[in-house]
Amino acid sequence: MQPILEDEPAADAGGLSKRKLLIPVDDSPESERALSWTMEELYRQGDEIHLVHVVPKLQMGNCFGAPPVDFLPQQDPIAYDQLVKQAETFIQTRFLPSLHNLRVHPIVHIVKAEVDTESIGTVLCRKAESLDVAAIIVSCEARSRLQEFFLGSITNFCT
Image (tube, rainbow, N blue to C red):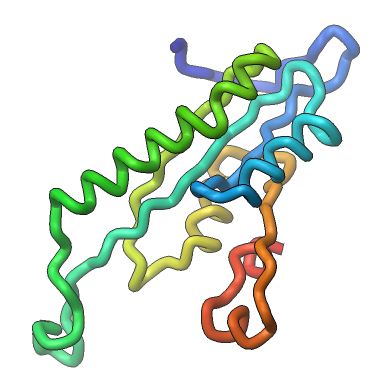
């Protein structure tokens, strides 16, 4: 695949600028629905589709000058590599076939992030800014208000 280098936005045959659309994905039906909605309602010929999955990585840091040996597990590099492989697998099996049928070639980003310094929402917003996307299409899973309070919401954060 050739790298994409742009000095100015490309235009399609209709004179419309090529847009970049970012879709955060995980191994869930909500992500599939977000992609499907995007392709039916928002996508137009020539747009770039960016699929982004964030793989959280625990970072061992100091807490008040002492190493956190009692409350944070050590990052297992083998288990972490398996998480990355799982991400590659579900993206290849759940998302790429439907886009291939539509003759759309997405750009896939698997981002490794430190969970103690950056939330997934922050990572997605930074990625969107660096790519200069026109829209972030985020799926929303059904949660109670209590669950959302304790677990947070990437959709609310990005909005």
